[in-house]
Amino acid sequence: MQAKSFLTLADVDILLAAARDEARRNHWIVSIAVVDDGGHPLGQVRLDGATAFSAYMSMEKARSAAIGRRETKGLEDMINGGRTAFLSAPLLHGMLEGGVPITHDGHVIGAVGVSGVQSSMDAQIARTAIAKLLG
Image (cartoon, rainbow, N blue to C red; front, side, top):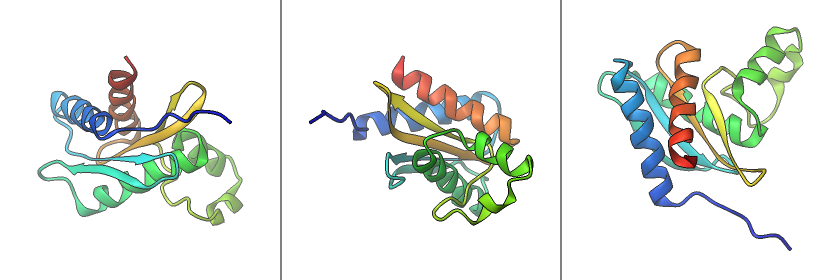
């Protein structure tokens, strides 16, 4: 049997704070979500002025990255490349860039999803937060 790493409340706080700092530093108004390895919500923040849609999409991007075990950019690229049947995949609703899995010891332990600005900027915020956590 193997031991399994997981995100703690302290980890979630670090991720949300680091993502919020990166967004504010760039004057980006976004929503940020953190989920566990099964896509279940652990934390979310909606910056002042962020839309309700961005709150929904940040959670779906995080969930899709965790369950799909890859960045949502890869899912988006697959669909844009012509594999449109993938749009019917169950449980994956945030297949736009901005969801990034958190990998520790070779295992996905959760994900960060960001929505509210250009998708590449959303992903930048998520990656910055994860880098802060994993140091």
